[in-house]
Image (cartoon, rainbow over all chains, first blue to last red; front, side, top):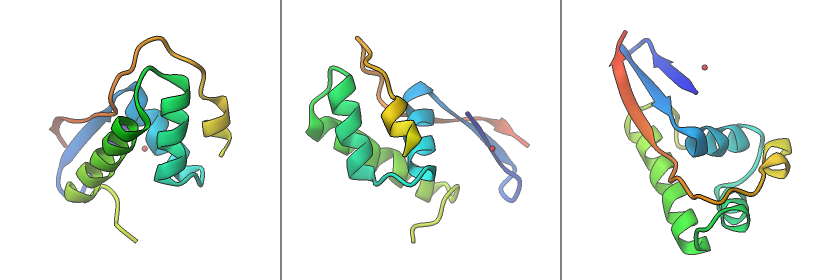
Length: 69
Length: 25
């Protein structure tokens, strides 16, 4: 998935897992639900999955690609 | 939450990453 931020003049790319995470969030899932599902379907601990989802969201917020509501 | 339900099992875990590609969904 490619994200274009016309205001800042940058464009970004999410890898496969990042695309799944963002798509699931846009679909109405909570970060906790996404992390749980990642841990259930991939060789990763729930704690690591939760930390990775949180880090991705923080990165999106930092780059102002999403707003923290 | 269709996306969550459609997530299939993978043998490898790739952390979710956001990378800047260039300068101007």
